[in-house]
Amino acid sequence: MGTANHFARDYADARRKFLAAAKGAGLKVASYANPNKGPAGEDLFTDVVRIGSPAAKRLVLVNSATHGVEGFCGSGIIVSWLRSGQWKSLPRGVAMVLVHAINPHGFAWLRRVTEDNVDLNRNFQDFSKPLPVNAPYDELHPVILSERWDEAAAAERGRMFDAFRQRHGAMALQGAIGSGQYRHADGVFYGGTRPTWSNQTFRAILGKFAVKARDVAFIDLHTGLGPYGYGELICHAMPGTEEWTELQAWYGEGLTSAEAGNSSSAKLTGFIRKAVKEALPEARVRALAIEYGTFAMPATLGALIADNWLHLKGDLASPLGKRIKAEIRRTFYPDEDDWKEMVALRAHQIMRRAMRSVAEA
Ligand SMILES: [Zn+2]
Image 1 (tube, helix red, strand yellow):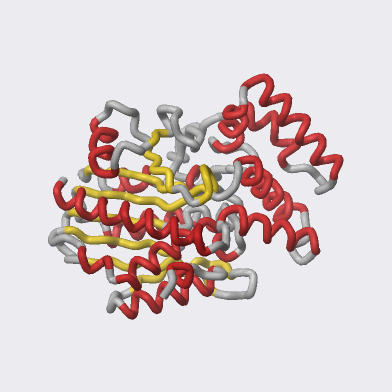
Image 2 (spheres, rainbow, N blue to C red):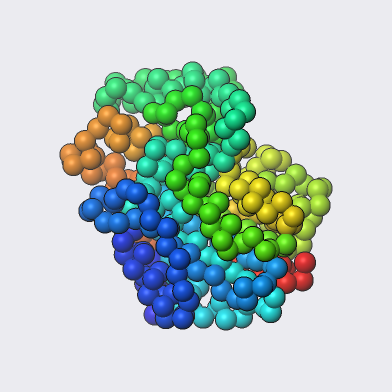
């Protein structure tokens, strides 16, 4: 079976493929029901399998669809991993947990955010404390969510963005918008004011499946930044630290760090790996995001701004609504066989490295 066949056409198809692959592998699935429905009225779940001995203290944890629509990629990777039988080469004493669609609502609705318009990868904050302030975003918000989706609004947005880039640099625009904000619930990259359903579910999964682990390789699967099909390995450790040195020994020299500024990702706070460290305070957690490139950055950002406008102010059933949904799907999931082959091959290489490295840690 060709690699592309492991990738789905929509959330329901992805879930069917995952459940069938788990069944084929003889694995029990734990399902967490999201209280909402998908666009066709379908039920939404986060599904989890654990492979390996229940007593294993070493764990490879692979998570998908933190950013909903990016779940096409993560699902294809997990399904092809199960179908290919590569999971059988798990070393003794190592377990593997595969999380299918931690943000099933975003996946089903072709959105990067959760049902509450929250960017899950900005939502892991201590909400009893003051939240990060993002003044540059505040300045840009009025043109990010315009009242109408027309040429005048686009021109105004273009003018504001150009002026911002001229003053602060191109990366600063991505940083200001993408690093996250906690003030505009109707804006993009909004981190929320409380843990979302996906946040709580992820913590519940850790409590049930990972709590005994003392050495953890965490891999979170993303798309939308970098060159087409290329899997950038992003960590959040500073070069020179123990975690950085170990991650480099595990995954090779190509590692980048958002903190060090050599990654295609902006520096951000509130990411999901924080939950792994918090849930397993006694464990050594080595966290990695694989970020697969799709198209150029302005397209990605434009698709997100359009999608945010559509769900807050627009009509999903209109021709414009359908165009915007098609565009965000394509932007985070190039529906091409070559892209899928590159994505799955790289992920499986990294998963095999993670198994080997965590076994020897
Ligand atoms: Zn992402």
